[in-house]
Length: 293
Image 1: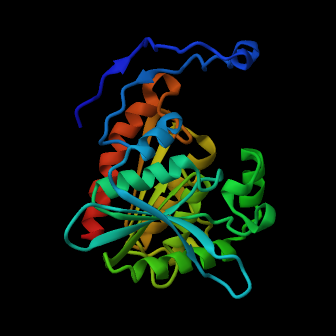
Image 2: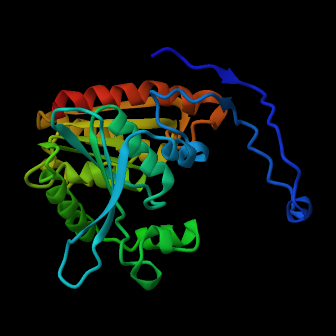
């Protein structure tokens, strides 16, 4: 992939500030390792420009409500459709511990750009104030608290419902992969052990399943990790050894200098996160095309 331009400085034309803006406290300075980049449309947006990217997308996106359990609020789910004539593979996105954010929805749009149907359920649907989901919760910290209440069994039940719904979409070809980030990356890896397994599993900086679950992993797994993420990276080698003995496919890639969450935080770590994104995303698309065509 041809590297995009890295911009060190930028000038922005400002309109006159309102009185409220003039008295507001200054914004916190950017971290010292922050870089400015010009977005390559072949890569996902980073967090700060995700909403803008999503709003300007030519592709069709919509919310749907997916029933999943008697007496439970339905799963509020974001779906993005590719622009293609034939049927497409589905990527079931498992969000970070930050819930169904604009960034996750923009990743769905990027997958649609590559020809996949992207299905991103809000896994805390019904758990927020008034029975809402991520968008009903007042702060990111509160979203994190709710996500942490989800048991593995409940998470899988919700994912099963989203998967069943996605499989019946008229535009879908019947093949489904999961892709998860952070907390969702760990859940994506674990979902490789369900029966029947998805056609493929992508794990972005998520921990590997425990030793009791690993033998049940049957789906091919692609793992993408930041090199400066010791907590998660410590689980790679044991999983790789165990799956190799079982002749199961697990291909981990560790990107030197990149941190946890590098795909969302591309402007951090002095360019290492962006470099990791430039390498990891094309590898992800190649992997998905191999198993979902």
